[in-house]
Amino acid sequence: MQKLISVRRAEADPRQLHRGPVEYTNEAKTTNAWLEGALARLLIRATGNLPMRVQVGAGPIAVGPGTIVATLRIRDVAALLKLLAYPDLNFGEGYLDGSIEVEGDLPGLLEAQARTRLRARGKGTLKRFAAAALQMTRSNTLAGSRKNIHHHYDLGNDFYRLWLDQEMVYTCAYFARTDATLEAAQLAKLDHVCRKLRLRAGDRVVDAGCGWGALALRAATHYGARVRAFSLSREQIAYARERARALGVEHSVEFIEDDYRNISGKVDAFVSIGMLEHVGRSHYGDLARVIDRSLSETGRGLIHSIGQNEAVPLNPWIEKRIFPGAYPPTVREMVEIFEPLRCSILDVENLRPHYALTIEHWLDRFEAHRDRIADMYDEPFVRAWRLYLCGSIAAFRAGTLQLFQILFNRAGSNNAAWTRDHLYRNSD
Image 1 (cartoon, rainbow, N blue to C red):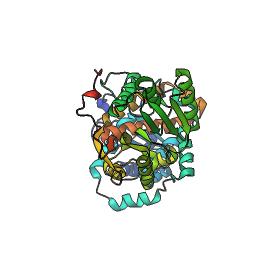
Image 2: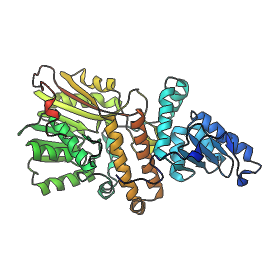
Image 3: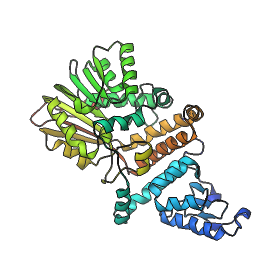
Image 4: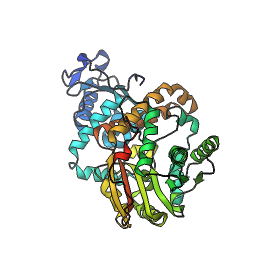
């Protein structure tokens, strides 16, 4: 893996160890120095004493406890006041517009913040509810979902080609070994899913939220399945159809640009990888009805989704800038999808560490192409996506985000694996 400059965790510099609350420079000796220093110290306390240095303008530098992982440079008092007022949104906004700069280990700083907030959960409930009330998650109606998906997934296939694997898989990989390549780990994930579903030649499969088609193509080419795959992204569907033609399986795989709610017909296997996050809590009943009318009496299914351990809204900056309408469910909320159905849960697996490592690979590749991406879009776009990737690494490392795979079948069906041996054949 390529070594990142400025954003990857680095060895601690002994000169950056905690030396006291404030450091003064010649430039800091201004009439506003006392205010800037006081606000910088306040920010460190308000964020739970993170291991960081904070400087406002040319003011004094406040130093947090422990081994410092990064320095936060804030353009002026106005930017700092915005950050203090609504940090969950305005840290991202400030980083995007350049009024906040981070020097050092950005994922490490965000991980420290995530771990601090994890320890503080249950405290400051009123403040958290007040912030949640300000957050208006965008609708996932038929029209709203198309708009939300277009915002993220129709940025252009050329963009995603720069930093995804060769199969264009934009979900958690499966690392049988931590030193595996991203390409090998993504193929291993596709096989892991197909083996869980025990796909066989001739199986009828529906893939809800198929991305660029990697799983559907793998199921057809290596397991002999007949697949109908759905996505609302025009870019994804066009790419997937081209891949199917190139592989000569266009008669075995049908890629359909449509909403999951319009899926019809009986199938032997229902699979959804990375779509549930975009369904929205209020539409889980819609998904349950689709599964119920689609799955045969001996059918089985798998839902793979980013999740969390506590039912809290998605970070408001991520919802605004990156994933409009998104919500990562808890296991309890996922289970509620199946309770009204004639389905039994067979297996729950959490691949959280695998997703942290997956995104580290993505971030390496993203940074390697950052100049080209800036030419394709602009510098704020690069900063926004860097923050999103770094924040995701931090959340999966710290455990504020999870990655759940839930395997299920019809309640009366005995068509389930007797052991798990089939999952690991031909694996290292």
